[in-house]
Amino acid sequence: MSVLLELDPLYILLIAIIVFLSSYLLISYLRESSTQKKEEKGKIVTVKKCLSCNYVLNKPYDKGEYVGRVGEKCPKCGGEMMVTAIYLETPPQPQEAIS
Amino acid sequence: MDGVQDWTSMLIAILILSSFILNFTDIPQKIQFTRYSSVVRRKLMELIEFEEEGRRKSIKYLKDMNLPNPKTLIDDYVDNFFMIFPVEREPIDVIKRLKHLLRTRDEAVKRYVLDKVPNVSEIDRQRIEVLLELNSVLTYINKVVKHYYNLGVKFNDWIMMMQLALQINQIVRLAKAYRDAIDSFGVGAPIGDGAGALVARMLLGNVSGASEIAPETVLYETSFEGRKLYVIKAKGPGPTVGWPGEALEKLVDSLECRISRIITVDAALKLESEKSGEVAYGVGAAIGDLGPEKIAMERIASRCSVPLDAVVIKMSNEEAINTMTKQVYEGVVRAADIVKNTILSKTREGDAVVVVGVGNTLGIE
Image (cartoon, rainbow over all chains, first blue to last red; front, top):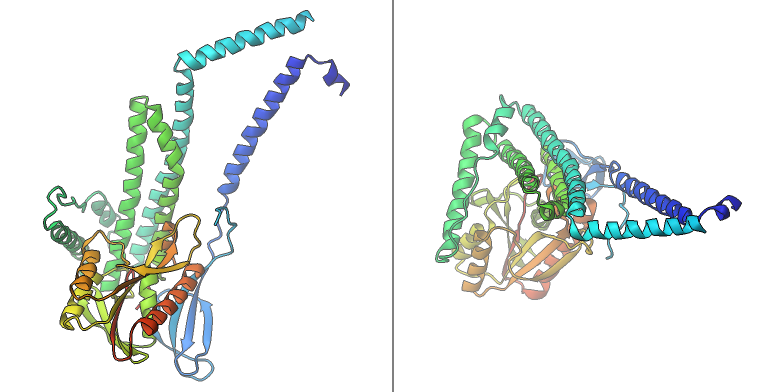
């Protein structure tokens, strides 16, 4: 502290400006790299519903499945199951916009 | 004390000099130009990487479909198959001319794929067409950005470079969405734009047996709470949007206008302050085409004096062209409920109602 008091006020001003500019650059860089972090992709879920007993089964999506596809047997009653939905489940994203 | 005076004089001299440089030279603009052009250059590299990655992924998906020369197929497509819009200064029959050009282009793309891959199934042909289109869009975005960047450099136009630098993040976001869409279409699960088609599918339950009423567009007939229900959607599960306007026109004509209500359902772009999956309803034709399909819906509804309702499920541009998210799916469920309530509250038993589920029907039969 005593060293600072002995310094010329202009030196202190210069040091303050340099510190401010360096931290501004550092924060900008950190902010940019944090927004570029790898996004989590999530997983695609297939929802199947039994046409006889309304049993609902959620499972990971398999290539070739589509909404309206009928064919698989219900594990509960043995009836036909139909794909009723396919969607992507993603981890919740932080809200930045004002809604 | 003398030291302080020296410093003060030097500071004043620096201030005067800086003021002169800032006000009477182009140096600040040159510095800004260098900064902005470096930002654009960096982002341009990202865009080029997106294009190359998209190309690599598409080649992989096309190879999985056992196509012989996927690279040539893409290279010969990109930059070609553009469409020149009809003259609008003379508005007479502009919709007819636009519809003709759209059909001609669609047919040309279809013919191109079938010539290159003769024994391909209909669904695979539609998937190939979409992959080609996505690659074409990525190349086009890159070309436009490169064009403005090169123009800025050529003429030292720092205003153009600044505008480009300020917009480049949005452009990169859009290009990223298109690059990711290649994966979504490759996987084959429903995309956000399929929200309208999924609502239509939900109303059908396990009803099957559709008839093709217009090219790549199907009509289902079912009943709901004593009402006759006609459901129109694109023919799935391939990635197509069909011709819902033409289909509606044909159906209402064939029923001689004996329809009580037409309800259109589609995905809509949300504003930044809105949440994905929000549902809104109103009147009009909910369809985002270039004109011919929308005007066909409006014309037939007004000619027959049938109320035309619109239900929209909101989502971002990225969500619209990528695999449907859970939030959008929940919106679809809500939209289906709204359609059912509209039918119950605004029509009577014995009435006939048409529901048009607009959108890309990838992964939805």
